[in-house]
Length: 229
Image 1: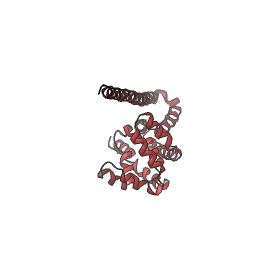
Image 2 (image 1 turned 90 degrees about the horizontal axis):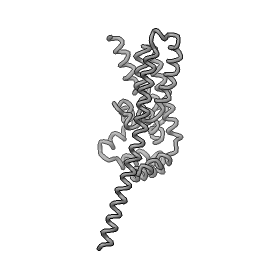
Image 3 (image 1 turned 135 degrees about the vertical axis):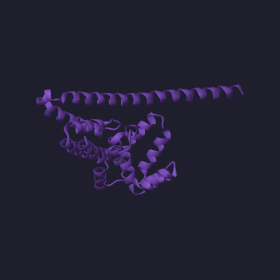
Image 4 (image 1 turned 120 degrees about the vertical axis):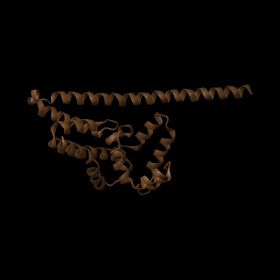
């Protein structure tokens, strides 16, 4: 009896320690994401400060640097590059809208391509590091499934009927996720595009056509705002 209670106590202590380590790891990941977001906000403020009439001689260099930074941010997961794109569209007017639209297309295409070549086992190892064993097992099973059966696999393992229905309309789901407010929490544009490439459920031509339409609301809203005001 005493031995059983001691074993139970040790087991509870072990679980408590595991939860503590997991919480620490999640906090570390969250801190990195928050710092990246703070860095992006600082960069946006610096660019807005530079693009003024008194600094016309360096506008071209600032715009070029900003556009390159924007494309890098859009490729990376969990980084809100959209805010920088909107800042450029507001500052540069119609030409900026066209420029940012094209850069966004290129960046999301690059993210998709990176996803195609990103080893799924690395993501599975990261999930294991976070002690998300069920998610790791699901990802490894999904990766072992043939591309033809992957959609069926996801539908079978969907947590709810609504999710299952959305998965069957995967192109609509992708468009909704790309336009979801605050989608940085689930990876941002770059992360969502990368996962779309990794899952191999989307053909590249259809994906490119989809994002060409899906990212239009932002630029159109800026153009409409300029016309009104």
